[in-house]
Length: 88
Image (cartoon, rainbow, N blue to C red; front, top):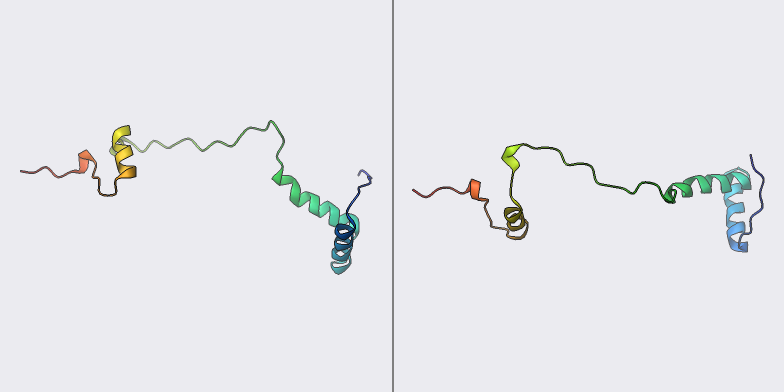
């Protein structure tokens, strides 16, 4: 374990000491727990950036070309060509 010194604003120090007293733990334990909860919010720089998962192959029945996909996304009443009823 490493021993270190830190500088804290007076009000933050008083609040941390209050938490330590209220929850019957040492000031050092309050600081350790606070750091453990904070560290996941700061991943290592250079770590692999998040990427969305690879899409699953849903087979031919879901195949739609780019133009139709654009129409499907933007036109609420659009019916894909392959689903239109043929008039007789």
